[in-house]
Image 1 (cartoon, rainbow, N blue to C red):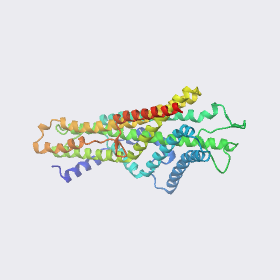
Image 2: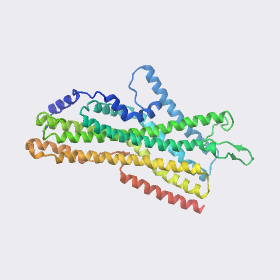
Image 3: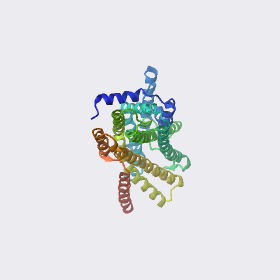
Image 4: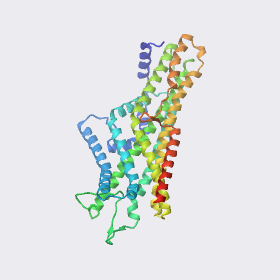
Length: 417
């Protein structure tokens, strides 16, 4: 079997190999969207140890948490103070639940900053050690796929957010029982220390709610983009690793040296890739659980809002906002399930590629060392929701079916009332 010395030598060879001269620009190209969205809110790990940078980083985190809570807390206060009816609570529970889910995902990402930094450093090392042009092209193609997912997520989410925060400006103001015009905010709010409906408090609260929405949408899209980037990066590494296993039999540009060193190099890279997959899965498992619950509830509620508003002939802009919101939630949960399925498939393909090499040309005592990578590739490696539910396309269909079941139940109760 492969001994520790061979593994150490193979790892040392990979570390001291010639570096990719454009690895910094390649890495930035892959994670550009995530950096632009997460860094302003303090969710991107700090790479500088100066006191000023640390203080600014903590200030960004505190500001991000304050802005998101600026929407959540006043909404809950108004629900309690005004003793809303079940119908009003049902109408407002979707934005509240959605914002709380984003806040939970944001806090979880901050909580796992060390693990996130470790994954980023791992990815950076992969780009640095990619010196073969074909491998770099494979990784760039997968990085482009991750960027595409991030761009579509941003387009859906911020389009829906623009409609949501524009709604009070285009809809007629409400009139209370005293025949007084009441100006409303995008999100219901109640501040016990001042009247948020009177100027200039109204404009100030409106501005802070707009900032809160931008912060929440940046956190939501940034995490989705980051998840897509990590998974597509692993997919690219799986394709590169396949070439390493194929070069075990015939000395090639990916994997050369003696047969012992070739097997050791391939196995070492496989173990390193599996460590990255494990770190990514552990990093996002609670976030995926929050997304699973959020999507199941909000698909049901948004569908209910659309049907109800169509029956009541509500504003086209309001209905369009709910349609955009529904499309955004469905796309983002589909994104998580699709990349989870993709991750599972690509990791299994590594074992298939190892099995399909011309192992009969290798001495039998050496060929038996390839059994371990094949067996390890058979174990399920995918994103999970709280390590309970695998985020695959099958799970996506289950979420849609569950949401439609709750939607039909909700619509039935509403029609009886």
